[in-house]
Length: 345
Image 1 (cartoon, helix red, strand yellow):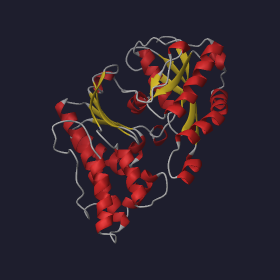
Image 2 (cartoon, one colour):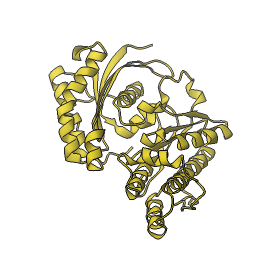
Image 3 (cartoon, rainbow, N blue to C red):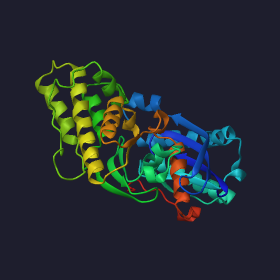
Image 4 (cartoon, rainbow, N blue to C red):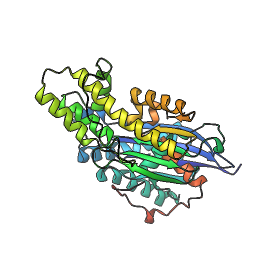
């Protein structure tokens, strides 16, 4: 085993102010990673009143919360900045007013403490989040097909090994999570809408309405959920007495069907030994159950992070930073770091 290092990670890509401290010891195979603290300050109440995330309001809350959240994460880990080896902020993608708060705070800490920075792609945090503490041999995991499903992204990734990955496809318009939220707005459900749609779907008939499955049979791994959302709008306009629970269940069935079918096709094509699911929509029980069942049919291992690592958090950012270090990444000076709201995986 190599030397143990400590990472302070910071996440402010949207509306959660989060910080975490992780320790990492590199060696052969998987790095040995421990979470020493993880703090998340939610802005849910504020944005619930507004019916969605308002970037400027989110940034103001981040500005107010960032210092106490970081201080609490250090205190909870029983360390101070002197004990930290690297600072790892989310640099993108996300809302630029929100990202700037976390990135500039991290740069100020780096300047004051002379600690180098590991700039982390938020989506890389999701990609690595199912792989914490698996205790498995790398040869048993890869190739892995990873489905990342969040409010802003729907991506299928081929992980060739612990270091190399390739994006196979992604959404060409609305992400799956975005479609869930927009359907919730059409149905006038409370914010955040995605979980409300899933909850209402439990009381509905998933076969009640045959909603379209966009791009299902196209020979690629891209997604489109805009047309599915529009189909829900027209269904309510033309049949206003349709039970909302049936709409939710049928919509969810169509969305999950597309996600599972494309993931299954990728797993077969690339002879995947395992399949992983991550991102905010990974908390959806119907999607989890369907992808797990699909994995078992293929005799592939299935990985999904715990609920607290599905939604935005700094623990997954620290986890990605640890894997980056383990894979040979060279940390940077604060002068080389900037936020990029359109950063690609």
